[in-house]
Length: 231
Ligand SMILES: Nc1ncnc2c1ncn2[C@@H]1O[C@H](COP(=O)(O)OP(=O)(O)OP(=O)(O)O)[C@@H](O)[C@H]1O
Ligand SMILES: [Mg+2]
Image 1: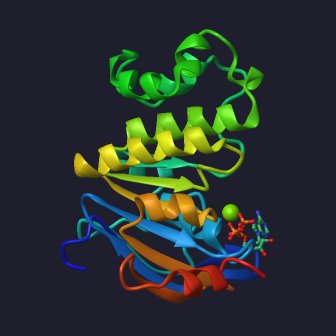
Image 2: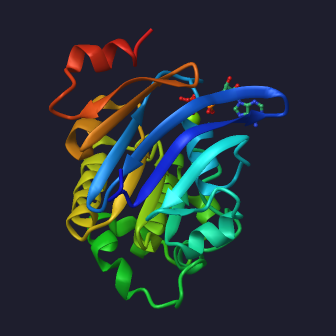
C-alpha cells in the first residue's frame, strides 16, 4: 500500500443515520485500474462519493500518495488531481457540450480532447449544442471524456458504460487503457463484467457495504465474480 496513489482504510459512511459503507479498504497505484463490482444497492456509488468528498466519512482514512485527505472538501480534493464522473446527473444540461468539457479545466483549449473526438465524433459535432439535447448514452460519453481528460492523477468513474452502446464502450476501454499507460490511476464502478475485464487490474467486490472478494484479474475466477453480480 505504501506506493498507492490513492488508498482508503476502514472507510465508513452513509446517509442520515443509515450506515451504507462498512469499513471498506482498498487502494490503487499509478497506471492501474481498480474495478468496484457488486449488485444494485450494495454501496458502490456511496464509496466513490466518500472518495470524492461528496459525502463526509464517518470514520476511516483516505490517503493521496500518503497524505490524509478525508477531511477535505471536493474542491480541495480536485486540486490533488482527483476527478469524478457521477453515475447520475452526469452533465450540466443548460451548458453547451464545449462548456461541459472545459468547465473545470485550466484553459478552454480543445486540443486536449482530440483523442476523445477521434473516438466520439458526436462530441465534436455537437460542441455548440446544449448538453441537455444529448441522449442518456451520449451524456455518459461527455461526462466520461470530461472526467478522464481532467484527471491529473486519479479518476473516479461511476458506471461509465451504463446505457452506452457496446461499440462506444470499447472506445471507452481504449481511452482508459491509454490513460493507464500514461500513468493515471482509476477507480471504476461497473456492473458490466465484459467491460470490466478489458480494463481492470484489480477488483474490489462489495456486498451489503462490505468487501466480499478482492484480488487481481488473474487471482479471481469469472464464476466467483459473476456470483456476486447476479441475483
Ligand atoms: N441520497 C441517499 N439517501 C439515502 N439513502 C441512499 C441515498 N443514496 C443511496 N442510498 C441508499 O444507500 C444504499 C447504497 O446505495 P448506492 O447508491 O451506494 O448503491 P450502488 O451499489 O451504487 O447501487 P447501483 O448499482 O444501483 O448504482 C442503498 O440502500 C440506497 O437506497
Ligand atoms: Mg451506483
